Length: 146
Image 1 (cartoon, rainbow, N blue to C red):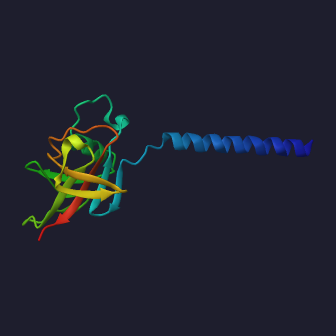
Image 2 (image 1 turned 45 degrees about the vertical axis):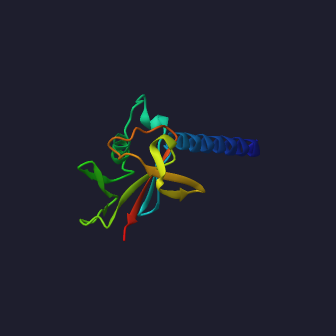
Image 3 (image 1 turned 135 degrees about the horizontal axis):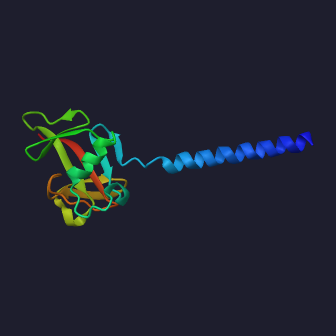
């Protein structure tokens, strides 16, 4: 009888532990910002984060990420001037450049970056006017110009 009770208690404890892990995993949201380095920031768009919005701009989505504590940025005169504390210098010898795999909003002739084996073209508009799509990657790269 003692062994049966121990076994039942062990099974109950295991089930409760598994249920707790499933609950925690289900409640934890997926990270939408991937920081490969300080100068290479990947933003993943999801329908869940976008909600019912169908004409969301990248800057609005970035604002959601900022509110969640996943991203910091500053914008001035329509240009992203700082991401996660890295500022464009006054002479713009370096600056944040935007790339995307959304072919309607990218032009590889203007420049491209590779991420996880896929090529992403330079965005044809800035964050304040670029309409995003769910399940896309938008990549900010801090580039130096000679």
